[in-house]
Image (cartoon, rainbow, N blue to C red; front, top):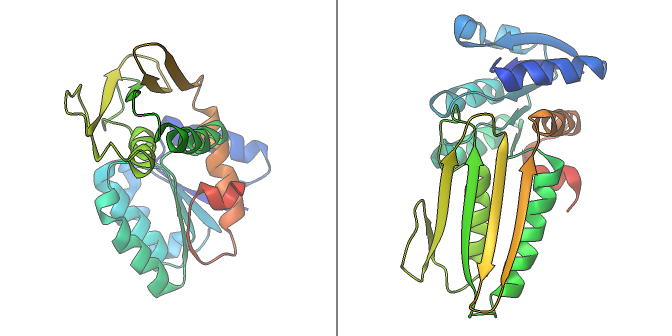
Length: 238
């Protein structure tokens, strides 16, 4: 498989290393220094693009790939207010797009666990739910895209919560989502249900970025030859 890596920071370099070890070929590496090389002529050399950049660059990068007919897998968060435009562009060009706020297999299992638990806790009104996410200090967005996905899944299933807020709230209808930024923390997400008599907590702790990179490569392998808009649920089958 021939891969274009868009965004050659820590994640891009790890994707390069793991993909190459699996026998894939990196035919294009795009970063700030050569952003002008993100052109159809160069993109046509690849079978798929993997995009991990910055919120302000993601829409342009993804739309460029889709318009060139190149399937693209993106893990950039913080730009989803324009996701509907990308989905429409994908349909227009008959291309393929897969977005995930987190490509880690473990995190996607955690997503499913969170959904199941939230559905159960909807009936347990004596429990108050709150969230916390911790990431490294270089992470630009807060809360994380993963935390937002988790929070929205809770709101969809726990009727007493109507919105989330990125601070501690005394409003019973708001889900408190606390963000912390600490050096060298790849990513920790915690969800806690607490009553006067006990506490239930689920947590996912990433030990490195390797899980994110491996999941992105798995998604890229899966999407080649397909058309449409997808998520990691489609890749993993749950």
